[in-house]
Length: 463
Image (cartoon, rainbow, N blue to C red):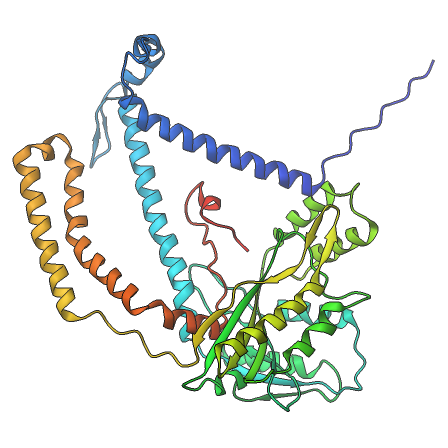
């Protein structure tokens, strides 16, 4: 009698392992958060509660927290560790961890602010690219070019932000052919190498450094209209950019033809390479889940997306017009052509969709500083409030019972000044110059620096 050896179970795929790891990390973060909340709330819950003396019930289990550690004093030269209850050591450890989280949160906010402002002051080189109409082109050539650019451009560090190195521009002006160009940010060696790479696309390609035509049309009395196009579904789903129909590429450029009252219309794709390959695990996990529901072409689209290259992108639709209605109509016309990016995968559909149109003056003066009188008023009010609060804490005895109450005094000192400054910024629309510069410079959305322990994914999406 012979027995057949059962076939070994196939090991889980990389995508399945990644999905399981993500789920474990989410449960770990949730468990750590609930544990910390429980440690903070436990001493404040009254007993008896709802007629039950719960403290007497759990007292035997909590006897371990009263165990002194270490059993004997330990001399560490500079410090002598005295026996303390285990519960007190746990409280000190929790306080130290929360203080570290506060420091990392400050680093997080500082990195977000730097990513919004530092790229605004970096110069860019605008290179017009002219390719002969007789040059043979294939969709695979664009993918090959992007892969080479991905390897040539260095990735940025979110803690040391820099402007996006590549901006692909298509610009149209009245009675002129559509102009395609690259706007580059970085050292001269990088600009020179990218210029040589673009000249090697095909024979006869010309790459010339010129002034940005969009910036040349920004004159007083005109309006800058802009909208950002985003994907409507998750980042793991692809969009239909190249293929047999090529509806997006063939329908987008004709919509750039300036309408009446429009001086220039432009589509700008800001890209920054993603250095690691972790992004593709989300795509592979999605392909594994939809293996039975997605068709052959849909699985091929997912496979093509997983093959890369991968960039952080921002797609801007811009127009400069003499009247707001003309600029808004031009941007809406360009945005309607993005419907050709629709890509269906199983029961989901991905496409690009233009957001609301921002209407800004073409030339924005710098924001006015807060008046000196208001600053002095805020400082004097802060000193008086802080002194009154300190006197109240000293006479009431709350400072002895709750020493941390003294931390409120410096916060009260800055409160009037910050309130007056916020009111002044809101009254003068101080964010207008920042929004105007962000739109023209093509600043990418802030990126999560991943510095907060455990909970950094809760602070926003990355890529």
